[in-house]
Picture 1 (tube, helix red, strand yellow):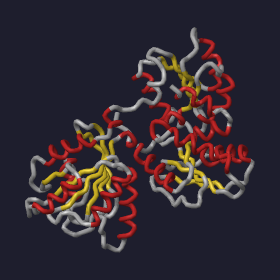
Picture 2 (cartoon, helix red, strand yellow):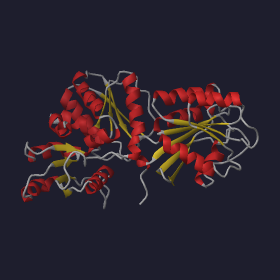
Picture 3 (spheres, one colour):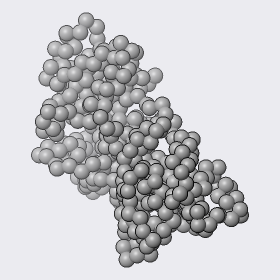
Picture 4 (cartoon, helix red, strand yellow):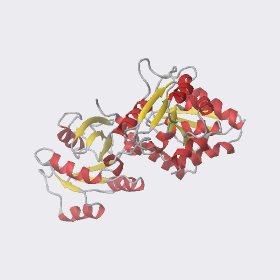
Length: 398
């Protein structure tokens, strides 16, 4: 089974036009995934490629357009390149024997602001060696510098892997648990999974699948039921479960069934911790009480899908918000990897982010924090509106 896009290490490839970004990437992946040409600006859009990069594991390369693109669609392409930074776990700046200038230095500054580790790869050494002065300048920026030629360096892949391994974020080396660290091994966990219109026929949604696997990896006993069978499931157990995890949409019904002495939370809240920043999201939810008539709320989704009649992001959450606040709110939805202009919003509510990586969510949180706009997520918003957020957070207090 292939690794999910959201679980892969995202490696962004950046650099000026015609320094050989695509040639380097093709050599590393062993496939012609990017067009190679002597004409500057050949890579017009972001090219994505998933592969296994041993010993790192599953990765996803993001080959971007040249950051000094001078073609007709330059502004559009450079804008896309900039947005890719927010999805990048490790950045690769590629230059040639000319060294770097303000283009690369601006990207380097952005990487450092977002705490994205990066390396600099000097390509085309078969044509001309970089001067000692320019090379020393690179080493003042980072110790992670590779001198190579995509055309004939047989050691390129080895050199690249060696540097990537040094830069891999800690959470990719020691993968965080979804819920397995919250309960003892061998304990019983009940997972409440409603089968509704949003659940594809024959399948359950991704966060639920990942949580079940996490329970198995943590040597826990998983009991999967619908909300209509939850009461009987609890009664069937000889001992109370250590934790009940529910789909957020069934939170109210489940909270009324589960005795107060049993810990309760939701898949979305678990993913708020896994993919984002739980404390920031909890703080953001409290801003709901400060909303006024006419305030704009942005509901962000990582993936695009066809909205159904009672869609959670377009119908249910807006209804819960208006009922909780009693205000006439302006609620707008946005889906996809792009991040819209958020200046006019008083609150941002993010989905569970099962289809994107943590780097992208943290980047969005950082932008929201810089602009002073509260941000939270689906599960925390729902439990806050229903008045059960303190209980849903009880399991995390230790």
